Image 1 (cartoon, helix red, strand yellow):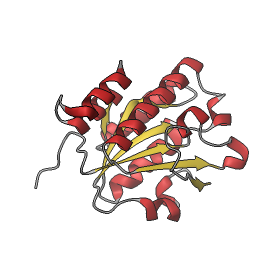
Image 2: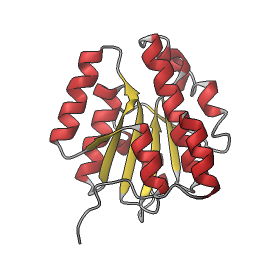
Image 3: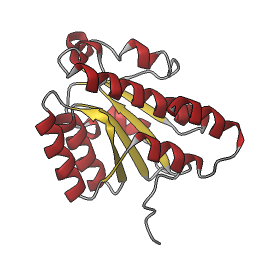
Length: 185
């Protein structure tokens, strides 16, 4: 069996890692707004297309909860609290991973810490990992670039918000297409 090279709506699970209020304040402002916007687009597309979503929060007592603008779009999702950097090291996260979804779509922060460690551990478990380049961030852009290069070299597919959304859709038809097209404009 060949591994698909594009995100498949029936195989995908979308993970938003640590997009938290206090952590967001130390990120580059414009880039952070783009990440929140793109995570929101993907969360809405995932909801519309029945793609399972997991949200994590790194030490929320100290770093705050998920950005309100984003959490408003996913009101029925209860974040997995963690203190480990790799989400895979948190048992509650692993219990939410869906076995029949072999593709994991990653977004969030920080690219060079929690995203990269989670991606590498997911690959080690046999998952196909997609990292949404315009929906991940690090305080230092050089750290993000380094993390993306490491993940690409490890076998992750580096992609973008629009590619994932339109790969999930598969065709320019129906109400889902109309709704998602409006989100991206």
